[in-house]
Length: 186
Image (cartoon, rainbow, N blue to C red; front, side, top):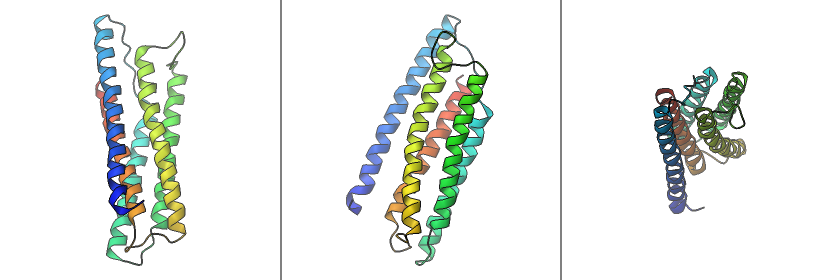
């Protein structure tokens, strides 16, 4: 991919993800409003693991930022350690999300079935949909890690690193928005 097309394509992709989540969160607000009026909305406390996952995704972004700054300051710097740590933190994010869903199941909150509630179903859909995007982000981090181990990135050439970091930062910001949305609009 050429430098002229890579960034615009990334931004177009991120804009489409924003639109999808805008639709989901709007649907959540409308569903909650009508069900609260009927007194059938269940307020579900968010699993603690979701907050731990926030720390993991935030740390991974800080690690990526540090790597990019070092590459800009030192043309010979290799970001492979930064990528390895960011990838591990990304995997931790995914793991904490799964732990959060496990907590929900243990609390008898189901996505579907006779014991499910609309609030529980919405919580699963929103977090699962983000998890799928974060999984794609971890795949991007893994590919970028592999390429950094091969020595493909340096202060003189780091477009792939930069694009991977931008996508991961976007996913982190999106998660923080979703967490705040779910925490305050339960």
